Amino acid sequence: MNCFEWQSNLSDYLDGTLAEDLRKKAEEHLAQCQTCRERHDHFRIILTSIASQPRTGLPAGLRKSPLSTTLARESGVKFQRYLPWKQVPWYVRTTVEGTGIVLLILLAISTGPKLRVLYEKSIERSVDEFNETFTDVSNITEAAANLPLTRQNPQISSEDDFSDDNGEETVSEADEDDSESSEYLDSDDIQVGSSEIWRFNLKTDSPHEIRPKVVQILTDLNIPRSTPGLGGIEAPGGIQFDLFVSPSVIPGLKRQLQKIAPRMPAEQSTKSHVGETFAWYKNKSRRKLPPGKIRVVIWLSQM
Amino acid sequence: MPSPAKIEHYVQAYGDLVYDLCDSILWGSPHVPAVFQSIMREIRRTKPKDAFVSHERGWVLRLACTKIREAFHRHGRNLTSSEQIELDATVTLTSRLTRFPSFFHRLDLEDKILLILRDKYGLPYPEISTAMDSPEGSLKVRRQQALATLEEWLWDYR
Image 1 (cartoon, each protein chain N blue to C red):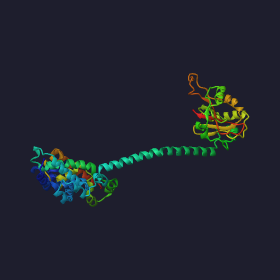
Image 2: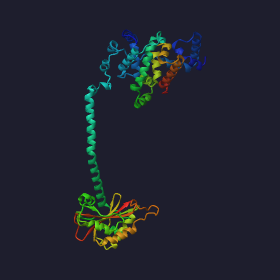
Image 3: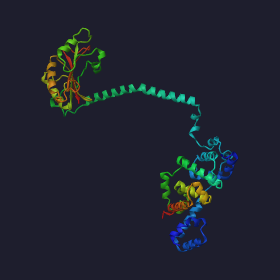
Image 4: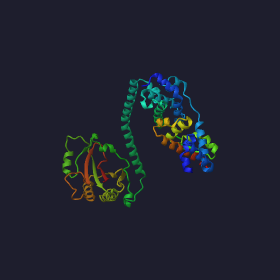
C-alpha cells in the first residue's frame, strides 16, 4: 500500500472498520512511512479532542415540557415579540404609533417654512458680507474699481421695491412705448406714489465683461463718480447697479444699454418676449425718494 | 402526527443528543433552547415516513439538522477578525490545542455536524447519511478532508 491508498482508506482505518487484509497492509505502510505515521498521530489527537469536547445536557425545564413557549423566556432568550412594548395591546400600540407619526409630519410641515426663511436670511447675510469684503476688481476697469459699490443710505428696502402689495405697480414691459406707460401711470384709478423706479435687465453670458461698459455709460451720462452704487455690486446670479439719478438720464441710458445688450441670433428671435436679452420696466412706489431723483436698477443677469 | 407520549419518548431518547448538537453548532448561543423547541415542534407536526421507521434517530436528527442550519444562518457565531488573528498568532502546539474549539468552529457547518455526529457521538454512517441527506461515501471523504483541514491549521505553525 502506498501513501495515496492509505489516505483513501484513512476514514475506515481510523474507525477500525477496515477489512482485515487492508488493515494489515495499512499498518505495514505506517511502519515504513514516517509522514503517514505523523499524519495518523495528528488525526488521532484531533479525534480525541473532538470526542473530549464537553457535552451539554438537556435542561430540566425543557425535558419536562419541551414545547412550552414560556421556557424560552426563562432561558434568557430575548425574542423581539417578548419586549414590553410588544406586550401592550395592539389597539393602544397602533394608536400611539399613529399619533406619533402624525405629530412628526405636522412638525416637519410647520418647521419647513421657518427653515426656508432662515436659509434665505443666511443667504442675504452672506451676500452682504461678500459685498462688504469684496476686493476683487480684476474684471473691472480701474475707474470703476474706485467707485463706491453700494448705496450708503438706502431709503427703499428691496423687499418693498418688488412687492405689489406696497402700492407698486408694473407700468410696462419690454418693447412697449414710453407714451403708453405714462398714460397708464397717470390714470387716476391707481393709487400709487410719485417716486419712479426704472429697472433694466440685461441677460448676458458674462456680466463681468458688461460691467465696465455699464459703468462707462453711467459716467458718460454725467452721473457723478461719487454717486453710491455706480460701481455695481456682486449678487447671486449676476451684478446689480442700484443708484439714484436725475430723470433726464433715463432716455440716454435706455438707448445705450440697448446698444450693449447681446443680440439674439436671427433664427431665435420670435415674437415672444421670452429669450429677450434686454428688457426694461418702470415701476412706481409710494415711498419717497430724494427730490428730483429717480431710482435706477440695472441687473446684469447670468444667462 | 406523533402523540404527546411519542414526543416525550423522543425527548427522553434523543433530547440530550439533539440539544448538545444545537449547543455545539451554535457555540453556546442563548438561542439554543428556542432552537431545540422549534425542532420538537417540527417533530410534532411532521409525520415520519415509512422509510424512517427503522431509522428513528436518523429521522429526528434529519429534522434537527434542518432546523440547526436555519438557526446557524440566523444566530450562528463566527470568529471575529481579532479572534482569527489571535488564533493564527499562537505558535505552540499546546496553545493551539488549548484553542481547539475555536479551530473547530472555523470549519464549514456541514463538516462540524459530521464530525460531532461521527466522532463525538460515534453514530454509524447510515444514520448520519440519513440525517445529513448525503451518501456515505461522500461523508467519508468529507470527514477525511475536514480532519486534514484541522491538521493543517493545528500543525501549520512550523
